[in-house]
Length: 208
Ligand code: ATP
Image (cartoon, rainbow, N blue to C red; front, side, top):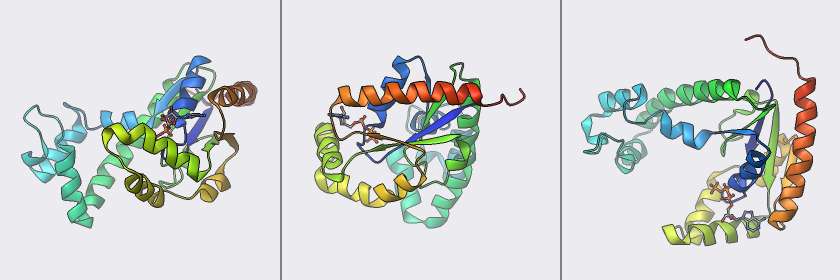
């Protein structure tokens, strides 16, 4: 696709729920979280470089990345974090560009939880923010994550580390309001889908 809609929103705002609704319209979803895992998958050059830089300790017996170990290393030293970001950010951006380009639907959705925080707004034609009031967000995130052990304090800490609702809304071209039912959400996505089809058809194709 030559028309890329960047989708973002805070933790538990409903990004996955919204992308599933676009997927039902046949729209290709490119997910930054999935790409972030792909670039360090077994056999990737990303993983090879990490193991070379930090030593074999960052690998599990299976050859996969030992994420808790890597988190410990980069948490301990800012220069380790800087090195890792300098390696991974370009790899992730490159894959995001490749996969959105290869998407065959009329437009595609690039889902990036930290689109605003990581200054990636320039990568997309339009920014769609999933907006929800903080109380609802907290309640939904806690009830979804309680099985995995993320309590209210953990979710609150993550929310503190993300940009504010206002900062996100300030860069939004479109907003889906997810304070209400999933049926209500679905109706909003239908309207946006029609709008994006029109916008995509008006966008000149970039040379291939
Ligand atoms: P994360 O960033 O943490 O991955 P997310 O933004 O992808 O979260 P979802 O997983 O889509 O958010 O939604 C969070 C939780 O809230 C899920 O359990 C989802 O089923 C629920 N949820 C989403 N939208 C609604 C809604 N309109 N009404 C009720 N529950 C909802």
